[in-house]
Amino acid sequence: QKSMDLSKGKVKINIGQKVLGEDLLIFSGPCSVENLDTMRDIATKLKALGVDVLRGGAFKPRTSPYDFQGLKDEGLEILKTIKKEFGFVISTEILDVRDLDKVDDFVDLIQIGSRNMYNYVLLEEAGKLGRPVVLKRGFSATVAEWVSAAEYILNTGNEKVILCERGIRTFETTTRNTLDLNSVAYLKESCRLPVLVDPSHGTGVRSLVKPMALAGIMAGADGLMIESHSAPDESISDAQQTISMEVLEEIMKTSKELWRY
Ligand code: PEP
Ligand code: MN
Image (cartoon, rainbow, N blue to C red):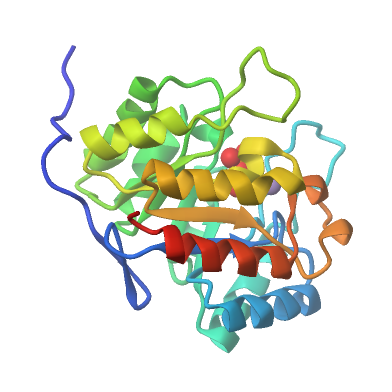
């Protein structure tokens, strides 16, 4: 089967003042963009902690159509305001090719969610914007399928693809997903693309986020994507896996100590 040789070199991506692939990058923020006041409060705290990229979903791919689907266009406006006020680098998920033009002028990183890893039209159209694309692993995708999905983006001429391990569905039901850190260690030795670990969706359990974030760093991740909130219990979505700013601070401190250990 034909595929790219991704084994040579290392893709490095400038993000804010840092370089993904060289420096430890922390992506954090709420599962969903909830309202401007909450987002300002969260952004103030994340800025003080030195978080590199603000994440937050305006479009939420929910399992049930009756659950909160995100603020959509209003959420994008909130992200735009936050970017202006705080100078944050923004990463947000796009579910639909029809929404790509709405984020072209201000979203720094386009996130492709787990459910859309196989949406090759979306991958190509997102890739064509030329900015970094965070490609989350499909929850039932093999590593080979995930890398093939990345090649759809790379084939548009956009080298800036960031893989994000967010856990897979296995026979195990104790946790929401099984965070596959084998994939991280494997990719770091065989693939030139940077890899993030998302221990929030990877576990679905607040108390497990810190140990698995640190395990991700030890597996060789280039950065972390973590759901955090100034009032985690009040999160509109994924409250059960959303951590406090205090725990995020602990994770960031210990991650720096363990970095490239
Ligand atoms: C998210 O990061 O907001 C998200 C929906 O994650 P995933 O696509 O990994 O489920
Ligand atoms: Mn979430």
